[in-house]
Image 1 (cartoon, helix red, strand yellow):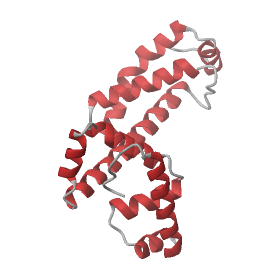
Image 2 (image 1 turned 180 degrees about the vertical axis):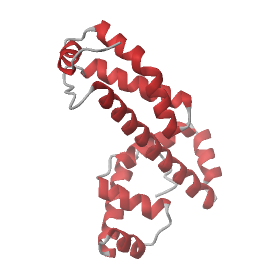
Image 3 (image 1 turned 90 degrees about the horizontal axis):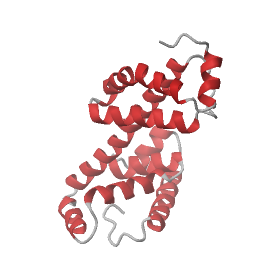
Length: 188
């Protein structure tokens, strides 16, 4: 069990001490996986999240400074990554719902048959949306996936409808540029 001081452990991780890393992994892997699973409710996804956290820790241990304890640092990282996963899933679900609601799912499937795998297309679209500036992305998602009118978005975000219109226009142009290799953009 790890009973050493936080500075000592931090120094060992900074130096890439594999034994210290292995002890941390064995001590926390199961606990962190169970913790992540409380958020994502999928054991395999939880295992991936925890593995990513440990990979990050191994690759970046030299840059990591533990503010309080290694335990709280690891749990906070797992929590953040689990919540990010849920946000990503929400966007994917909104996109599929939008396609279903507008009877575009069959058209997407035909696009998939002509060269793009459904998962790859969704990943490309999500990646493109995620490249938008935060406020622009938020406005675009509300506009396209929540079926809100510009006035409703403006009211919710406390901005003018003209700003919403401009931001949606900017988002569409950036997405067209980012996704210009995709021959048929259904949601634009």
